[in-house]
Amino acid sequence: MSAATSPLVAVIIDDDPGVRSLLDEVFLAAGFETFLAGSGPDGIAAVEQHRPVITTLDINLPGIDGFEVARRIRQVSDTFIIMLSALSDESDVVLGLTSGADEYLVKPFRPRELRARIQALLRRPHPAALPPATESRPATANEPSTDGATVLTWRGRVHRDLSLDLDTRLVLVGQKRIDLTPTEFDLLAAILEANIRVSSKAELARGLRGAPPGSNDYVSEPDKRAIETHIANLRRKLGDSSARPRYIETVRGVGYRLTPADDTGG
Image 1: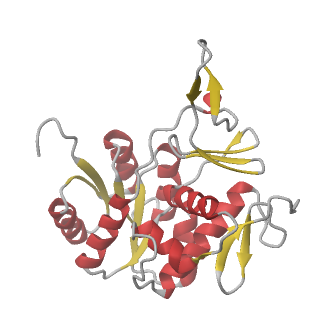
Image 2: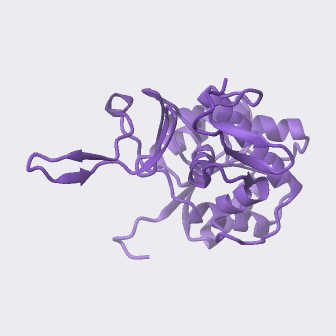
């Protein structure tokens, strides 16, 4: 890698030296520079210092558990979080994703599966640094310049009072900024792009992997349930309701779509 090229960075947070070593090998083989931490506070500090693209996070950590570490990381970073745990109950998976994780892998995991998840995350656009909330602006596609020409100033999607900027990854409901995880943002962007066409859970999961449109890649039931959890988290942050949706409508047994623009919702 040339000196002019910034290396991919990963932070590995796990109190088991053997697991840390295995994760280190996987990330090094994938071309990452790695930083290892054995506790939650050390891991949070490493994320703040090194600004990783991906962070792996164990749940059973000394002092502060992984759920709380994920919440604190989300306050300072938009890194992709892969949560790794021996806890396999659906309630644990839901709690992990609700805490801010993008992926949840159950230990023991196969290095090949982790490598596939890493590659899928790398195919997704990494969130750019967001502007301060004071710089938030309503969704405006164009504005005139001083010489009368029209200058493109915003590229995104709008539905009712919800606006999403693809360049800054800024989401507004009215004039209020909504902080989303990378996965929640990408799901919202996909649903806005599809408009009233229904996006199935499998289609949304494939999109997160970076699979080409029309791909028939296998999607497991746990991956579909993860989509359900991410959508539930997204609705909660948007102030939406599954019973009387204003933005995202569930098509039972199929997937999700935008609510009709002329429906006042709840």
